[in-house]
Image (cartoon, rainbow, N blue to C red; front, side, top):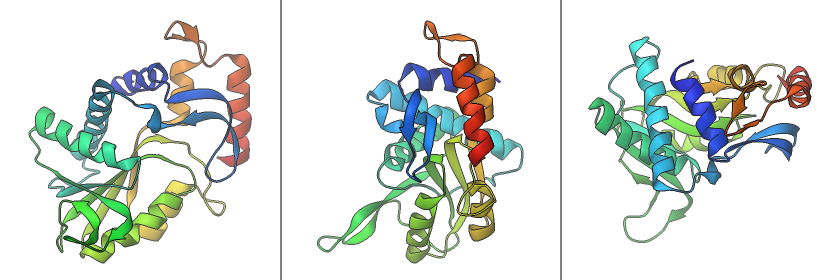
Length: 226
């Protein structure tokens, strides 16, 4: 799995990928949770940016993401540090100069005003959204119109830490719904299936985090919602 396995172990080590009893934003009871708000140090956010950059470049080389991305857009709030860290990682690690921007939760009515901070989008710009996870797709639906209100930019994809592979508002997965509604593909660093494959009965950070019981609960959740 290469960098994907390293990323999964990194999430466990940072306390970002945890197992237990949680409730998602969509109200579903889940046995695992991904909370990028638990990244707390400069070293952690720098590594996170490198993983996102690796995912972007890997998909560019595969022809799935077009080169020449003008800006990374990170939805407030968790997407903000991801956009900044990924932009730095693309510059330092791959020589790609990519702008970053993010939205304010409330429009600024003084100074320069506006709802967007960072790179000023222009008509024709290619923009990648960067988020932590996608469950129901609510965050994309909230922020996509914000990007389009600034310029006639092409939002060419969504890059996320984990694809939970869950249904959205209907019978299709959230990723499929996003594709149909907005015409953009989603590029996860890892999927929930890859997490199970990497961690099941494998010692990580000195312990087994997905044992038989946890795997059973995850499989049950997947059968219900994925």
